[in-house]
Length: 259
Figure (cartoon, rainbow, N blue to C red):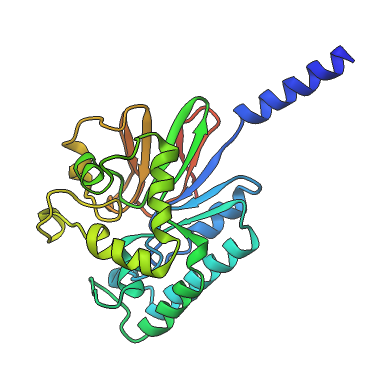
């Protein structure tokens, strides 16, 4: 009996330390996520947002981007416990139609608005995980200290409290709409705004480079600031927006998935 318990304990420890996460950064109509998903079955998947508004030079039509987004939503619906869909800034101008950023699909905006609102419960602002003793926080653009202190001054800065506080804002469209206007649309001059600090959907990579490690013990994973060739992976954060998928291994390492 003792030996059986020992074996079971060993298996549990192995499972806990072999956890991996597939991360899909900014999609913008691209289909690279499909190959990554096919290669990595039965592990958690986190999409970092920005599903729509393709770049003209990539020859992806708005119609193709919308069809791709519908596939991602269907994939989430079929794998609710395994797939996390984070909201990106390019979803905001379809959710709150007052806003219009670059490349917005004005022809299909009403359809997209309804599609997102009908499936709002499938999306989150933030997610977190523990791998090999490493705490990982996932948002679209990353969390910077001044923005957090401004809007959540009395909230603890552990990953669970951060995610609960942010995701609570999406419990209803009324609450989320207010949060968009008062906090999400904080944009600095780096992105054409005048705020002191960018929100977790708008913060530029330079804001992370120039800030101290306020969220001590948390490794941030985000996209948003597109890189030409490869991801920016540093001591306290990683910007993975480079048109490729990544695997966070059981040792907490970030590994690019080859096509």
